[in-house]
Amino acid sequence: MKALVNRQSIIIASVAVLIAIITFISVNMFGGVGPVTNLGNVITRPIRTLTATITGTFERIYASIYRFDDLLADYERVLAVNAELLRDIREVEELAAENALLRAALDFRDRHPGHQSEIATFLNWGGSNWSSSFTINRGYANSNISSGNAVTTEYGVLIGRVSEVGATTSTVITVLDTTFTAGAFVGEGTATIRGDFNLMRSGLVMLDHIDDDQIVRVGDTIVTSGRGEVFPRDLIVGNVVGLHMHPTGIGRYATVRPERVFDAITEVFVITYFEPLEE
Image 1: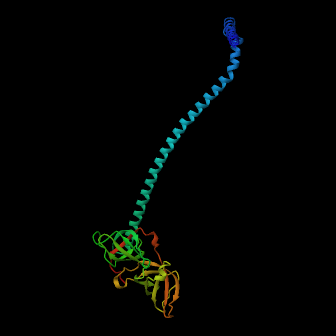
Image 2: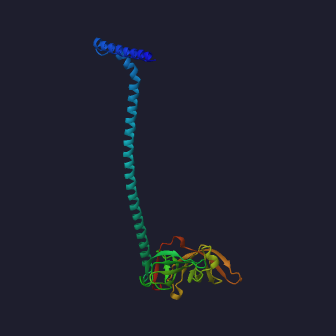
């Protein structure tokens, strides 16, 4: 076995020496280019080609990653600028809405000289299913509001009246509430607007005490009459949507849909003083 190993070692050494001699001769005789060199080139060409391909691929991947980082940074900058623009737009819209609110209030005041009102913010709805009321952020300590004051929109649409006044908040009952009543004009005559529990569920109020000879039509606009000096005249209540006979068979009543959508209440105007209009 030892002799076999020695013979293999001798053969390998001999081959190595032979390759070295051939390489030496090739370099000296062919100037570095010869059979051995060509053979090496042939053997290593696929490896060199693969290496170049892999290197180029990694270079492209690195360039793509670097470009992606740039694009991501640009995208984040665009998002930041867009968020800032959206904030600016919201501020402009809020200012525009506030200006429109105040312009409408001034227009209503111009059409009703002698009226004094204070703006208030809606806070929350009342918790009872038997009434229709909400709370505002004005009371006797931070305003001139009193119980009984009419509550309207900036356009003079009647929402309700103040029922209770606290230090910094007050309760407002809407025209839907069962305790709400107000004198109203309809056609050439007068009647009474009042809340009704059954109608309240449908978002309607009752126009009651209509004279027998009084003409009332679906679509008529109902406004306050100013009787009793509780509410100013000509506050818009709503429009007639139905005509009915009382269950007793005596007298008529109409159902009225309020002009104001109560779910959309955000700001209201409380009329703290008014002068009756001349007849």
